[in-house]
Amino acid sequence: MTPYSHLRRPQWGLHSWGRITAAALLLSAIGGGCDQLATVDADSGDGPDGSADGSGATGGTGADATGGQANASGGGLNVGLGSGGDGLGGAEGCADSSGTADFLPANLLFVVDKSGSMKCNPPPFDTECLEPKKVDDTQLSKWEITQQALTGTDGALAILQGQEGTSVGLITFPLDDHCEVPGDGEVTVPIQSLDASHFDSLQVGLAVEPDGQTPLAGAAIRGLEAIRRGIHSGELTGNNYLVVMTDGAETCQEEALDALLTFVDEARNFYNIRTYAIGAPGSEASRALLSEIAYRGGTSKSDSCSRDPQNAGEACHIDLTESTDFEDDLGAEFQGITEATSRCEFDVPQDALIDLSTVNVRLTPGDGGEEVLIERDAREDGEAQCDGAEGWQFTNDETQIVLCGQVCDDYLNDFGAQVRVVFGCIPTVVK
Image 1 (tube, rainbow, N blue to C red):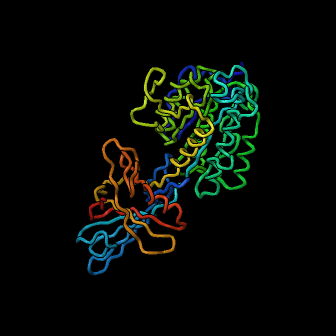
Image 2: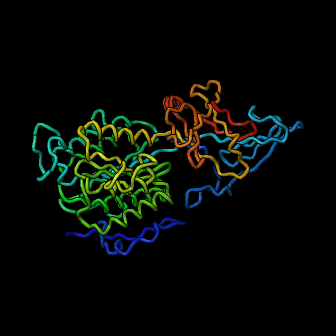
Image 3: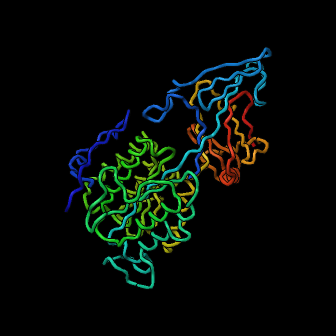
């Protein structure tokens, strides 16, 4: 067995990946997007962990004799005082602040298993995959289905192609006919804007013959490391996602699996990198692992999912091991992921003076039409984000605002539209 190469604890700015286990240290190898952000910028730039330090605010005030309006500009923050506000405040001595929602990209890195077993037909044509080949040449293999689900005519990435703010990259594993994975910080196809040229590059990256073992841990860790590097270099701004798909279990170095879970934890907790896991037919032995990856990676299918689905309960990951139509189901799941990562999101500035009960969201059409107020559609206890909602909602931790339903669709399809998140004196308008 060829070991992975050069696995070491990466340096994560103010945070580290955490304490990698002794097993990990033995590895001499692992070797639409359409999110928006309401920002309060600072001239001096962000701190190493991505948060604005506020030290660059330019200040500056102006007020008329009636109290009128004052401006304190720190980039995207406009503060209005007194009765001369923008119509959302107005009470004497009341302060309004608003942030224009800047476009926040979505970056996805797909880490896709191309081991020899991907040559097999999926069930019901082949339920065991005893040999790495098709048992029915008239039917597609798992690998051919994966290619079509991503870059076919109706594939998830074909649909996303040309969408502003969406960047996609690819790692296929293994790189050879055994256990090789990319080097430290390397990928098969770099994470770049999904224009026509880059879409062609992704098709070429997937146009390979399935072969080799399943270095799942090594490939996934390399993917997370590549995203981390992109964040630190400033090349990847916005929301970042890793999408891991496999049809098997780790066959190259099982002791690396603990390290993988640690990496998923650290990526989510310190850099908000969310990790999806997809288990294709053949991954039955990895159900508990993949479910744990999705749980730790912040992409659980439900709050009630089981982190140990081998015993009982619904898995937290996308489990297609019992799919009877792998072609349709995989295509639908890939599209579901790309849609989920293309949410209309806005950050709520963390300011002690902000009263979340006075948050209002306003939209100006791209044609310069009249600004309109978007009503809040509050969630019931236990209800999923944007589940049938029309309007905007807070995330569970109240650190972000999300546009839901037709409001989000209209915004994404209206070139030049702008959203303002306003914090002021009038209570939130609720449907």
